[in-house]
Length: 251
Ligand code: NDP
Ligand code: 8X3
Image 1 (cartoon, rainbow, N blue to C red):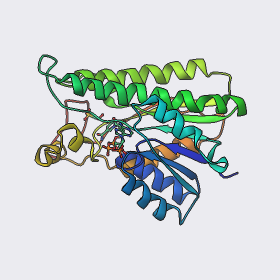
Image 2 (image 1 turned 120 degrees about the vertical axis):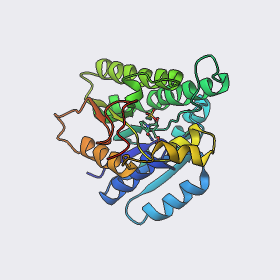
Image 3 (image 1 turned 60 degrees about the vertical axis):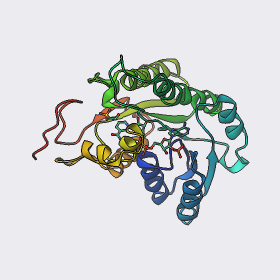
């Protein structure tokens, strides 16, 4: 039976390439983000392969999240796969210099937004006794690096929520797992450095970072395992990376 995936943060990077990979493999899509032009373009492009519905909402706003999900037409209302991917780092500063607005953004988007979407979609999965939730964490959810403070905290929270969801949903038929990437070249650093392209590009210079396609391929692998197999927690780094702070720039 054709499945339907709900992908947050589908307008860019990991979410966008996961949408493309899913579409090419026949998975219908509900694609979410705030940039309507990008949602429209994806709908036209991927609509050639599968059924696509788009939802424009700011994941920080719980009423908007609920209203968007309630508005899903019948043919998209049954979600088989939830990819909790929307998120970003905002700023890279010591705790003493960090901006409270950046902290709010990271906690509201990466943690609370993920919870709002999950809260809205889990009941129907419980009712149907099936579903698969993939939480996109990070190596920043496994270790803390200098100036990473609140971003790392938000991703450690995703790690805890991933474990908590798996424990609480055990026995419901819902699979829960996390994919935790290391350095992936997307718009992530453009957002972190607030549009400073030179600084963003520098993050990925001198080594081969992961591409969003690499993570999309892994997410597709995770969701296509037999039903009795749940990949609970997966960390993926570029070969050049050993930890958040150890990256061999010369290979
Ligand atoms: P991008 O910046 O390329 O994509 C981020 C996506 O999140 C966009 O589609 C954006 O859509 C969406 N988003 C951001 N803020 C909001 C919001 N307030 N409401 C709704 N949607 C929002 O980054 P990545 O693809 O790299 O990041 C995706 C996930 O992967 C994040 O959770 C990130 O933490 C994680 N990650 C990334 C790594 C990397 O090195 N790139 C490594 C480890 C984890 P729009 O702006 O249209 O709303
Ligand atoms: C993104 C990876 O190392 O830039 O989660 O924080 S990192």
